[in-house]
Length: 131
Figure 1 (tube, rainbow, N blue to C red):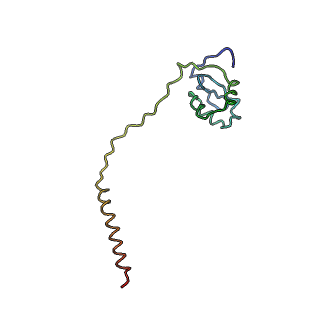
Figure 2: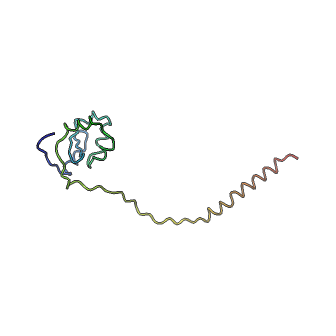
Figure 3: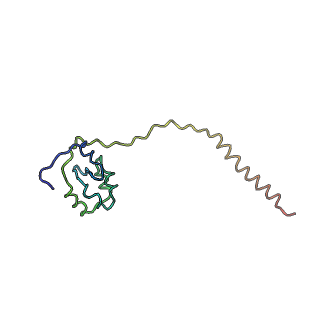
């Protein structure tokens, strides 16, 4: 890795999100992976999906080999200013109105359907019975 570390703002790194200009943030470090786009075993879509955010979780979830981690050194271009990286957003589900369900129809059907099946079975038995 280079000895003098350049410090990048998140807003600057975030702009590099194209196939011909792709930077990633992984573990607080910035990598210009543009030359690696065609060579990446998972394809360029995988790398592009990790742009514009801290891609550390995406990188770690895949379980990269030691060789892959070693390859990262040649793409290292500096560090990210941690104060500029947005905090992770947690998913908050939309508020829903309480579900009020009228069970009257269901209760009637639970009573009538077995009676109808029994009645149908008796009718079929009566008309198919040999004298």
